[in-house]
Length: 165
Image (cartoon, rainbow, N blue to C red; front, side, top):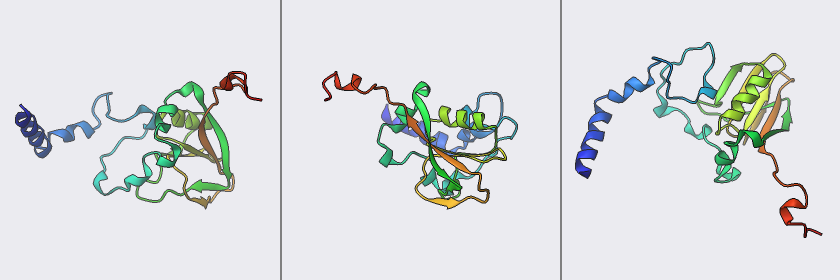
C-alpha cells in the first residue's frame, strides 16, 4: 500500500502534472486572496531560488504567532517607526507591495496570517512584511511602519482573578 502511494506521488512529481495548479485559470487560485492584487495578473516564478527567509513569521514572535493572528477581531496595529521601511532583503522582500488605499493595505495584512508589519506612504504605496529585523531609510519621509499585535483580552484585574494587588 505504501509503495503504491510513494510510486504515484513520484509519478506526479516527475510528470509535471502539478504545474497546472499555478496557471491563472478560473476563479480558484492556490493563493491566499488577501495577497492577490485586484487588477494585476499572477505570473509563474521560479521559487526554488527565491529567498524564502522573508516569507514566514520569525520564531522570536513565538510559535503560535500565526495562530493568534488568525483571529481578525483581536488584531491591532501599533506604530513601529517613521521614515523607514522594513528591509528584509532577498528576492522576495515583501509579501505584498503596491498602490492601495491605507484601509485596504491594513485589511490585507489583517487577513494574511503571515503578515506582521505594514508600511504606508502618503502617496498610497503599501508594503506588507512578515518581519522587520532590519530597517532602512525610505526614499519618502512619509513612510510609517506599524507592527501587527494581538489585542489584550484582559482588563487589568480580570486576568488575575481579582487578586493582583
